[in-house]
Image: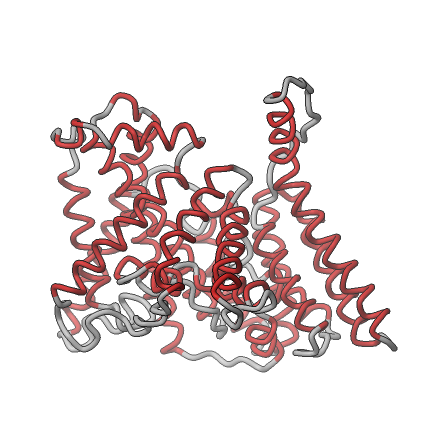
Length: 478
């Protein structure tokens, strides 16, 4: 079930009404309703993979309890590795088996040995990377004695499969979400209104910005050999806004939806395209994944405590794994490597924490130095996104080659007047709200109510006007 669908527009009010009025604010009944609703939400995509989600949930719930009850470290380690191997095994089979099999066959063919690898003809279960990481972090936290095992299966199942975050995050932590699931929740009108406002902005990002950019980005990337350098640059920029509008839009809808049920999810985006260096960009992009890798991989590897070589090694490992997490394709691995290279000057010169506050905080405009830094960081990000979007490495290289010639000076051949106006409007609203949790959190509060509500109706009109066929979110494939 898509957030930008009629089905979800019917599903959400029904669950909301039952949650607050039919359960009489009984937290146990509310959690049962959330679990049933979440399983229904997931089954609408493909009910067969619901069994995989349930199995993963039971596995981590049971191994968590067994680790807590283990009489010695050996038994605790056994249950820990059982969970890790099974979880990563499922992820590896469904997401990476074909990639490794085909890469191995290609490597052998380069030395004259031809084989026909056996591959799996199975679709990737939507959200498997996200709910698997939920379970893995829970098991690691128990193994490291950071938390105690949850004994209530319903509560734990809601933590893993809460429908707003189930298929595309944010990647939650048991330390953050489980306590909210366990406690009594009461309806808060102001939070509900705030949630609706964030849902509205998320839908605008997805339907008006991302989906409109995707039309041109797909046209240009799918026919890149037919366009000059100027148009190819525009195609890369369009995809840059497409993936941001698409994924951050999903996150906004997820956070706003959760707030309707009295639950606060982890923030996933913090205006990343206003970053002044790549280190800041990665603190603001897909925050839940970046911090997950930091806490469960980078720090255990030694983090930044070792010498220069250790910091460089650990940084490259993090970005390689991040690229590989996104998909079984060499394009994602190269995308990760590029980001590792881009961030390396900050690591080597210890400037990676220079820009912790949002740019131009308390000011209307950035300084010239800040503006140049933003443009440079944005340009590097656009370049890396070419590999992320391309179908193959050769496609990406040909695309870049098409940019780097005399045709770069040619006038773009795509008509984009309306899209240009939409992007300018979008950037102005994002810039205005950059100091808040999301762009509309405090937008227009000082203006007369008629103007503020007129603005909301304008967004609603734009969403309905530009809405076409229901387009999936990009991160469903990860």
